[in-house]
Length: 113
Image (tube, rainbow, N blue to C red):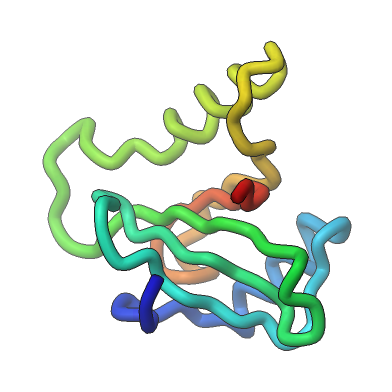
């Protein structure tokens, strides 16, 4: 886990969460970026006042992408389907295609550790 290398607009993200995922509305959203092993940038999110409640955000990387690569919408759908069949994967919380929120499509899931 390290510093955020590919920035996130945490205010816009927090507004999105407040509006679309009220069950995890956070105050003073914080983020760290996972440092290795991720083709899609992946972040750990938490509220400054509650570090026990953590979430994971995965987004498409910036730049020109190979057609069919980095299909996070597919990742989201597959993980949601697996979770619904009691396969031990994190619960999916939200998918957002609106690039105005953080600059790329992303999804949010529970953090399991």
